[in-house]
Image (cartoon, rainbow, N blue to C red; front, side, top):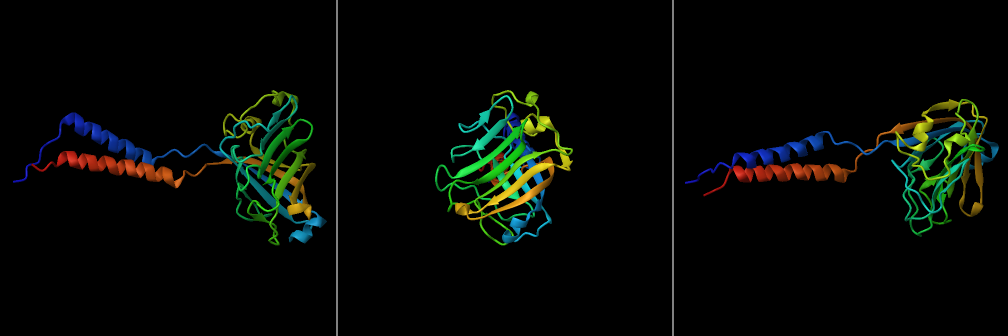
Length: 258
């Protein structure tokens, strides 16, 4: 005869609590902190025609940051500017994706050599805002190409300022590290999000390996906002595994064969 032995009430409550907690986490998992997105709008100059662009046509270049960026040895902070820099594989990754209508391909962080990555973000009271992504190598590139499918070494945006874009002032800088990309307390969040038009300065430059060619664009607008990070598949897998494990334990406790 098979006899079902009832587990103790406290044990059942503990197991039920475990399963319920896992289920709640699985159904309402909180995604990673939001990432800051810089969307630069720029008009192609005549030299960009050789890269597959149409002179006078507007293109976008989109930089999506990591959720945070720790201090690095190559970063600098003064009373008039901050410069966060990623120049080594051991540094945190600054940009998680690069896109827009002005580029083809999928961004890949260069990591073949320890010094391959080269990315930066710098706000300056004198020069406005600059952004950049690239590789220190002429062969280990970043997965992106021009509209004529020429793989390029770097993409930089320099000296964005003017128009409706808020100016950086000396009061924005402390001459010490401050986290740049936290979506609520980071440097750019406290400066304010929004869409800014009529910029009077700013240049986008796409550089080829070995400095064989450069394609430039005149910046006309900048949008700074956020996007929610998508949790890694491993996060969902771990939570699902926890829930399944709890259910197995509960069933075993409820049905012991004597």
